[in-house]
Image (cartoon, rainbow, N blue to C red; front, side):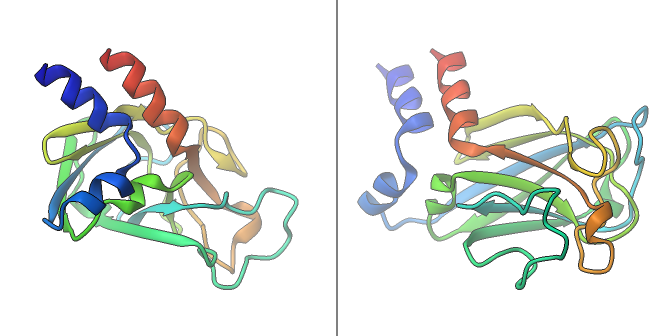
Length: 178
């Protein structure tokens, strides 16, 4: 019975769960830098963005205003200076609600120019794994294999980032856990 409750949490729309409780939650992110990939160890700030719209595609010439769009639900950042190649790095944030997990898209960006070779991303909410070592390849933008970088106005045509349909990833995770 306990396993069914955990499975239900993985795929129930989080906003419905958030409405039933007003308590805070702990969200833990785990990332890893791959030393054997292009990009290597960056010293830039990396941002995980939850949004209901995709980032502008390659045919968009100029950067949007505001840069991250107008439908960002939540964003979480960490310093890539804290990362050690080929070792997992974990950081935790306390949140007041979990509605960001209802966002359609998740994106990992770096507005700086020091490419980050992010390998995977995991997300855990109150000890329940939502994403489990989800690969950050292929990339979007200028290169499919390069370091995540240049998501800024000055270098918009050269940007490299990762983006995926969050609800599809959650559904895949739900099927794996069954």
